[in-house]
Image (cartoon, rainbow, N blue to C red; front, side, top):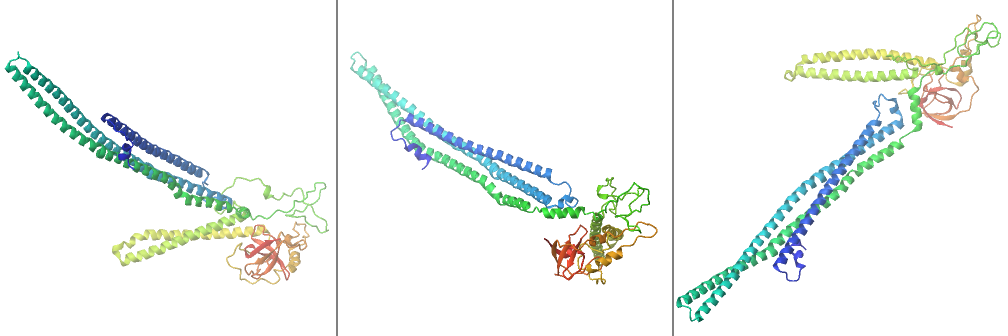
Amino acid sequence: MDWGTELWDARERRATLQERRRETEDQFEVLERHTQWGLDLLDRYVKFVKERTEVEQAYAKQLRSLVKKYMPKRPGKDDPESKFSQQQSFVQILQEVNDFAGQRELVAENLSVHVCLELAKYSQEMKQERKMHFQEGRRAQQQLESGFKQLENSKRKFERDCREAEKAAQTAERLDQDINATKADVEKAKQQAHLRSHMAEESKNEYAAQLQRFNRDQAHFYFSQMPQIFNKLQDMDERRATHLGAGYRLLSEAELQVVPIIAKCLEGMKVAADAVDAKNDSQVLIELHKSGFARPGDVEFEDFSQPMNRVPSDSSLGTPSDGRPELRGPGRSRAKRWPFSKKNKTVVTEDFSHLPPEQQRKRLQQQLEERNRELQKEIDQREALKKMKDVYEKTPQMGDPASLEPQITETLNNIERLKLELQKYEAWLAEAESRVLSNRGDTLGRHTRPPDPPASAPPDGSSNSNNGSQDKESSEEPPSEDGQDAPIYTEFDEDFEEEPASPIGHCVAIYHFEGSSEGTISMAEGEDLSLMEEDKGDGWTRVRRKQGGEGYVPTSYLRVTLN
């Protein structure tokens, strides 16, 4: 089925030449309208995809702006909020949204390159080809029209010559029968008739030749030339429709291409949502803001009703020699209640003494780790420079060894500087740890999370609760005779003052621990223990052994299960 034959075979009746000419014009107009409509449709689709690309680009730009607006400004290392799982999940969601925006940009790019540019270029090619085919058809039609005019002219000339020949023959016959006509007139009329007859015969031959030529040209036009042009237009239109269909397919393929990545982005958002751990965030808050301060004792009663000597006490009521409670006098200054004290403007110091003890210790540890990393980096650089210097000395053409001396000197200076800083931070850290221990009210020598279990042997009788009362009694100093204010018990012994309580859970020792410090207790790896008191933020947990004895052990050495 093709346009070159099917558009003509539908007409069964015999058409006149004028009707065929009008039909040719009509078919040309039909094909011209249809091919123009196809090209307009192609251009409309290109415009649609271009606007779709602009929508995708604007959408991706807005998504990226949104991500930038809500992304934390500070780097994760300096932002304490980044340690919370909620914040980490939110940042991950923002990153996934940013990746999603990148996929939308990829869709826009693919549509712009593979659809807009290619189809726009193909549309221009189709327009040029269409113009060429119709110009060829118009030329063929004009040639046929020119042949038809020549045929009409020869036909009219033949008709005119035939009438003139017939008129001349009639004139000669009339003169031949006229008795009054001279012989010369009759001869002249006969010659004229013969001439006209000869001219008519020539016109007849010319008209016949012209008719034969026109019929041949007309047959070539309708059966060969025009069908070929129509078939070329059909092929052009079908190729245009095929390319347009491929453009339709590219619209969906551009989306399908990014579906796996978008699915991963959505899965990443789901994983981020599942990663929120409320319990862990609570523990992170403790780690970030654990102060290391000891909790204050009871507020003493100040009796202003009677003038009497009042003995001050740091944390509790004193006991005079007669056994009656001694009250704090009005002249004694009140103990500082740090949780409710008014905050002054913080002055940041190099040793972080402006921070609470536990936070100071952590920051100093961080500084030590950073200095150690920098020191190792400088040491590695020094070794590399030495090796390079040796290579230059052995192979002078590779470089001048003296050119490395400034860098080696600078590296050595940096190493010395970092060693001094390490000594300084180590001294500050030791002071901070002693401050933490003093605020806790005990003399536990500790590492909150030691890398290996302690190897020192425990002192005799320092780690079981059977000696708890003896320790308490030994720590209680009787009031002096000169009336000085002395505490009845230390803050550490307050933990053991009450009757033994019921366990609040149980735990298993992950590592072996020798309770070598006062107030600690030994335990073996894998030993089941009763949990008596949870970690209060200082890294120590109070436990009870099955065979008897209570004391503190490092929290990091335990796997705890609460009742």
